[in-house]
Length: 351
Image (cartoon, rainbow, N blue to C red; front, side, top):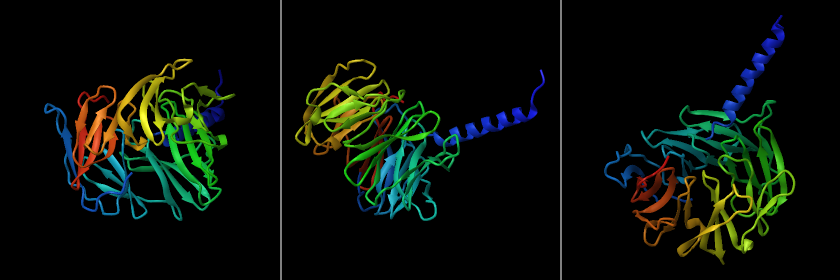
């Protein structure tokens, strides 16, 4: 059979382009800090474990919005309008340069990689990038037609409120508009960005299963699952008083039930069920939803600030800490104590 060399050449070129774009797009993956220098120390719950490296890391007084990678090896923070990236294992810190006439408006470590999504605003556009902390590479997100990932900023009040991703290369972006309504965009497996919900009264967190594609969100007084046709309503008592916490790697959905402004109960159930049967976890005491600590492994805690301890709501185990809880990663938590950043690994932590 005679091979058309021109057609073969074109095929090879497009395969290479597709691989480059896919590589560049989804390699994915509060607080004002005390006015002193930070040092990093690793603490283990079990003596048998080896301590993480303990370099001294200096962070300026203006450091804020500290966030950590999935494995806790990298942290990002804002300083005087600039985004900083620090390697927690060796203390190296560098600036992540914004594009000309642009500023960083959102960033989030996503998934179980050492990469994060970065959004910059330039004039009236939100522009999306991925940043690989290991390789020190910043890449603009593109679709298979080489179109840039951009969303219009319709007013100065518009902001990127959240981004969630799944391991199936699905990404959802929640844009809060100045009219207290939100738009939700989706990037599908072909890296095509589209508006899937507009002028939505979308309250609180959004979530997507790590291995799934359907967004879970709250609209008005209902928890819903985004479908192609009519969105499915998740049946739960007192939906008006329910907030979304997140979804773990086993596709369990976690919800917070409020009495007024305080969380009084946690509900969780499997999204794999056609009709979800929820189990409940009672709170040791009512708390603000910001005091609920959750990760993808299904660990859910009450951060009891007054007692300086985390309470595992499933096992009732109490984990004391010193200072202020400033973050968490896949195996533990990160605290700030008298200017020293401590990385604490939970007993029986899973990757």
